[in-house]
Image (cartoon, rainbow, N blue to C red; front, top):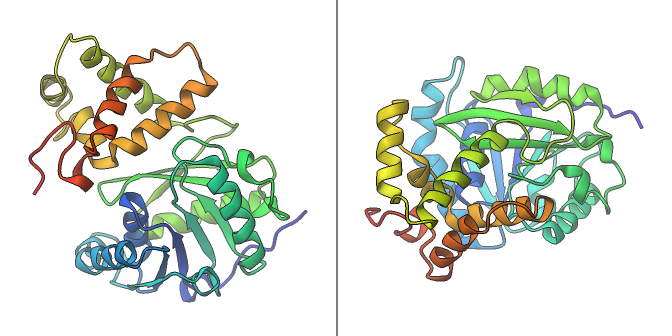
Length: 287
């Protein structure tokens, strides 16, 4: 079925569903051209924390984007209110397939007919959670990394996505300081995430085997690659619970993957050491 792409996008809000580590960063990027971003979260505390994060950072980030200027973020626990008039919805809820299926059924029912429905899923292709969606032609993956520092995006069709949506996003997203790259066929982990998954998994494995420590792996990475952080510090920033969810998903598809990385992550998650968001993960120097 053909889809009528949204128009007047500069004057319409973007909605972000979920206010976690990535949800708030996605909201930040879409607040850099003077418009409104609506953050939906059932938790008032989490939503307000995300709104405060956007307010604190948007002026600096917008200043680094050509034509950018600070917009605003609002928070609601009412899905219909969040979606009203939005040209784009970005879902950023936890990596649970049942939750995503339910969310997409609700988004498809409540969003305007020309609203694009995009998933920030780190590992699930959208083809796996459109069971309750009547208009799959407006659904696609749009996976962010860690904006505003890492600003590449994977975009990937759900198998039904109208080509005009991908073309529109390739034109519009760079105006917000983020840059889309299309996966031309369905790929678990998309493009860069597949490469990163292999690096992260082998890093975890050498620690699980007792060959090295998180700190030494990171320091070697920094020296050799010239980056400010290594794999373990980056996993702490993502959230070790999120990293474990992603690894569990890969393991379902690829049973031959080593169990050591998942077992190591589970020890930290079970202890409540999830990284930056809890103050301790592989490192314990987070204020």
